[in-house]
Length: 100
Image 1 (cartoon, rainbow, N blue to C red):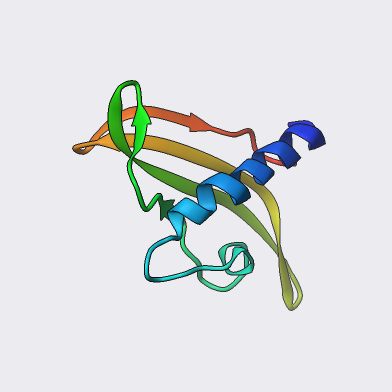
Image 2: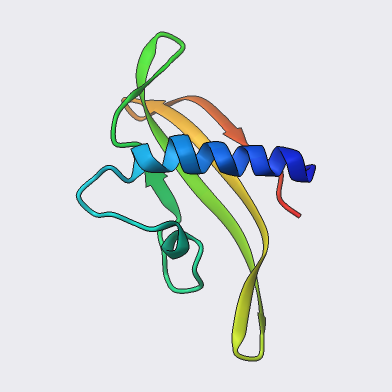
């Protein structure tokens, strides 16, 4: 994925998806989502979103690959999978390319 496309994807995720996903009583910070400490692997939108004429639950899955060196760890690769579901049935799913 080109840097411009990655920037756009992260910008949209931060400004559209994450605020809706974390409008629930338990709040998360962006730093917490991407920290080395245990953090959620998925996030659910607080409200349903229209998908192909159906109001669907939206889940974002964070797919991370970590590299540990001595006392530190860094994300080596990251991608996201967005899934729309209604009554347990998957309506649509998309996954970004891994970066870098």
